[in-house]
Image (cartoon, rainbow, N blue to C red):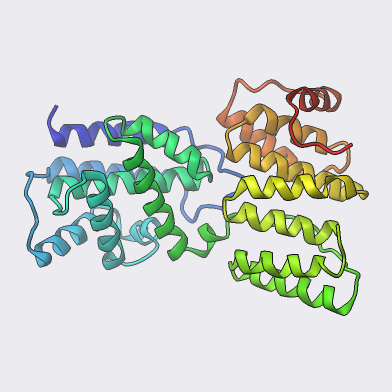
Amino acid sequence: MSYHSRIVSLLLVAALLCGTFTVPSSKAETPEISVDEAHTVYENMLDQINQNPAEGLWLEDPLMLDLYCIRLYNYIDPEIAKSVFYGSAEDAASLLKRLCVIISEEEICSDAGLQLAEVFYVSVWLLINYHVSSRLAIKETMKGIFADHSEAVISDAVDACIDYMEEKSPKIKNRYVMITNEVTIHGSNEYVQNYNKGVKLFDQGRHEEAIEAYTEALKYKPNDTVASLEIAEAYIATGNFAEAKVWLRKIAPYLEKNGEKAYWLRRCGFIAIEEMHYQTAYAYYVYSLTFENSPRVGQELEYIRNIAPETEEFTSEEALDYLKKQEVLLFE
């Protein structure tokens, strides 16, 4: 199979993947373009690649390299391209050159390598907008599409794509948003000041600094459930699920309000989804309904059924039994 034919085959596989994205991830922001428009992205790319197949040329001249990247940007409908790349042709060119080096493992880019880089990026874009928000799950999916590339290459390339998206789009960067009711906080002036500082830093995307502020607040109100849950949320936002679980475990004995217990269970469920433990996630969400009937739970359960149709459905009692047998995080 020629390199050009291989790219076309990859496009077709990704197009089939796109056809399954009828239910957006409930954790991601609503996509700015429709599923039909997303199909148009692939149709335009496929048509352009068929009409302008790569010739296997090495693009050592910086000007020629930039011009070819801009040409690739224009393979996509101009009304949609900015939504796909979250920026200009120049932004896309910088990304495609970086991706080409990662994927081809060559210091010099070729036209074929740049074409493949665009296919790779748009595949990740579709996944993050219509299917999953977990980097781990995206990497696993991309391994299946780009099976002849090493895991390390796929991992680095996915990270480059998502880092670019998060830099360019606040909607992607803030896809881990704390979904909860407003809370009234009580405590000393020092506690309130540090807590509010943490909230402000979190909203600015400065999660590590937010954690420091919330931790400082806990010095004035030890074992406070509100600040502790915020710390867990900040770790979730950074993708540090291990540390998030440490804090969820730490605060579990102090949960008294039903709303806090339900929220705690939903965050455990969210982490389980991100780690692709879909049955456990399903159990967490179902059991959370014992304490609070949140409409978000229905969305998450539908999402799980969509991406893991083999997941067994539970009653609340069955969900609790399952969680106990799995010896996962749980409060008494």
